[in-house]
Image 1 (cartoon, rainbow, N blue to C red):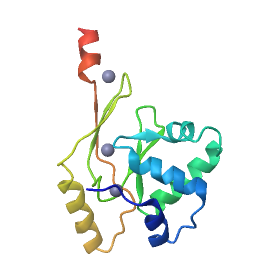
Image 2 (image 1 turned 30 degrees about the vertical axis):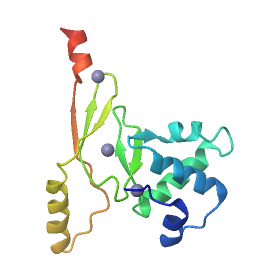
Image 3 (image 1 turned 90 degrees about the vertical axis):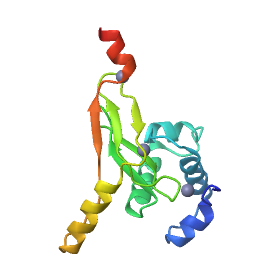
Image 4 (image 1 turned 60 degrees about the vertical axis):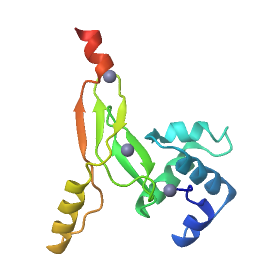
Length: 142
Ligand SMILES: [Zn+2]
Ligand SMILES: [Zn+2]
Ligand SMILES: [Zn+2]
């Protein structure tokens, strides 16, 4: 499946397109893994400041184009939330901070959301997080 078109997505979501935003969104869609605002900022080669990157990522989260999740140190991590990356849980290693996307386990979260929304609640964010030690860290310990 072809990658999402940043122009079209910004237009559909009613977000004003600037060249900086288009470049950032292109980069978000290019990534298949979780990233931090600092990671994304690095790709701009100083063309945009970190605060702007954060604001734009928050806007993308509000509009459902990206989702955020708590990282191993409580920092916020991000990933695209388009058709190419449906809702899924994550495994976080508490020692090295590795984050793995776990595909195919999203049904529980979706069902919980639709049950809650049927009862009149509104779900803004879903985090499904499994925390522990990754294989490498376990080996180092033993
Ligand atoms: Zn996409
Ligand atoms: Zn680890
Ligand atoms: Zn993920």
